[in-house]
Image (cartoon, rainbow, N blue to C red):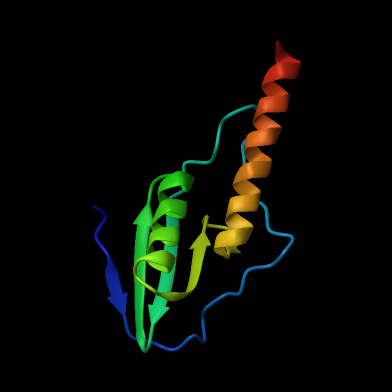
Length: 107
């Protein structure tokens, strides 16, 4: 279980996700950057932050916080861009499709 940091601060530095955001990938099939993923959420005046190693873990944590923890303003940051849960799932799906198509073309 990842260790969760709790912050009490304002949303002043909180970057809103953009629709054009894309998950950064290396040139080549199946190699994602080794950047930790930061998941942030809030409940009332309390902020929660956790750093995870993989996109899958970050996505799972964000969904868990939304469904079970009833937290709000959940975002996933890949070290470059900040995504909402729905944006992140779309980017993950598109990256998986790109990797699959690239692998088939390579064979």
